Image (cartoon, rainbow, N blue to C red; front, side, top):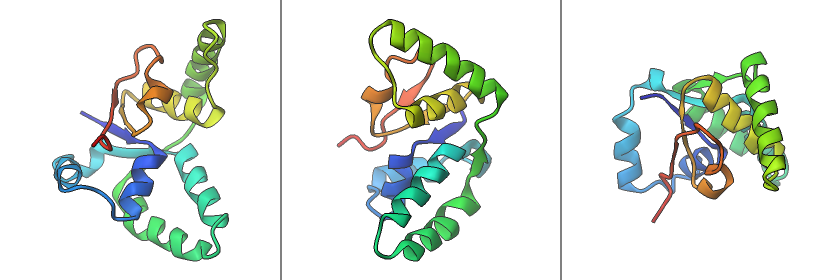
Length: 136
């Protein structure tokens, strides 16, 4: 199985707040099966630059996360999927935040299971497999 980690999962890992159970699950996944989206990279940098010490968070991200995961782009395939999902969710009266939409579409386009603590943001996306590794 291949996974795409949502920004909240990456943030938890960077803050070293992962549980033993989460660490065991992560260590069991080959590195070539771990990825994040380019949107998550943007969200991490955005969060860092909102902090009084941005370079501290950027350095953590660049040393702890980026060497261990593949960064998947929001490409043409993901854009087509995002357009369909956006239209379907709007028609159902359940619009989706643009960042979440791009992350979900990236997971779908690349056949990845999305790992997130925000399951409710993604639970109505048709065909998207979602796992919550942050549940208590």
